[in-house]
Length: 319
Image 1: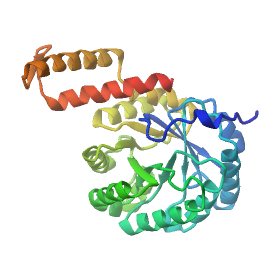
Image 2 (image 1 turned 90 degrees about the horizontal axis):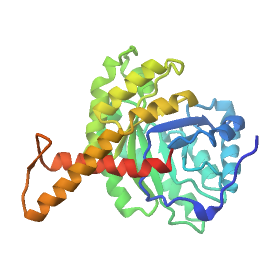
Image 3 (image 1 turned 120 degrees about the horizontal axis):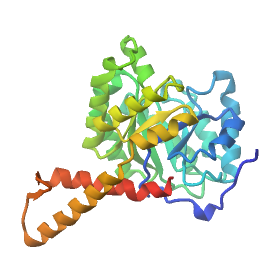
Image 4 (image 1 turned 90 degrees about the vertical axis):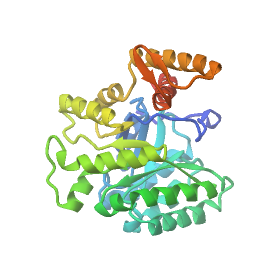
């Protein structure tokens, strides 16, 4: 198997709306899995330098990422992102040097274990120090950060506000989502992970609330038992109903199950189209709330319908 290479001119704009239903982790230390991931057609492929790579394989992972971005990899319509190590680990600096040192740059970075404003400032300063030496010093990365500790959860509202405020003044980072790291969170609070994950309900709901308050994507936890597709389906549907926009994936067999759960049905898409058409007709007459198929409709439902159509319009490019 050989790595497919893409013409740089066809790279999608970093600002284009991109659904992240199945967010697939690929250990960057494993070239075979990197090559295979080019055919997965998932919304997002995350080349992992963190938990998926043992400490003695970190350098190998960085080198593989560097070589990959020397010639822009062809992953079809999949977004290619990189998960660096946490600021707390200090080794994230070596990750950034490798990621930002190649000829081409990824559109998206995943930053784990972000607990404080100080950690974000340190990360930003390191990124700016490295990238200012490049011709594309104004390159803007999408950023998704992780909630993996009690401290982060308690700080989350102010932390997200701080990162977003920094994004308005920074030319290099655009926050787009929050990711729930369930196993690290359980370890941090001393919880025992159960099949129904009831010990994580509050944390998941709060993450969704903060994400939606700031119009960010919310990515749900990994279903560890990758062979249990029925359990994955139940957990994915539950997450979608709660308000999550996607789910982390650790095995190719999980992708289609997750994509289906986080995709609007054809019936839902048609409902959204009809509702928006009805809404626009009422707007033209100056009316506010209106009756649609036996239900009173106001702006929250109109916004929900618009979100459904936004995702539906992006989905064909991913499938």
